[in-house]
Length: 87
Image (cartoon, rainbow, N blue to C red; front, top):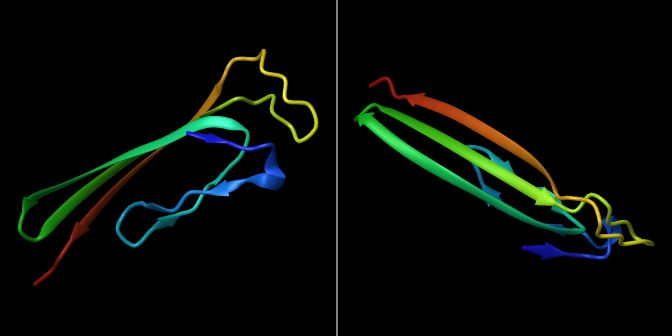
């Protein structure tokens, strides 16, 4: 959950994403940010990772006029990565 007065007072969320990837999205206004990551090793030399992230926020929040009559908007991201190790 996050709440700021606007973009000038934004927060940054440090998220470990896929292996070898880092995500630091700016969060401002009123909203919620969450993600889930799953890892599967079907065999010893292969790994599959899937990540789903979602941000839901009030689009009407500005630095000068926080009107809260509009519904929340959401943005989602999905990632899939397969790593294969060759011995």
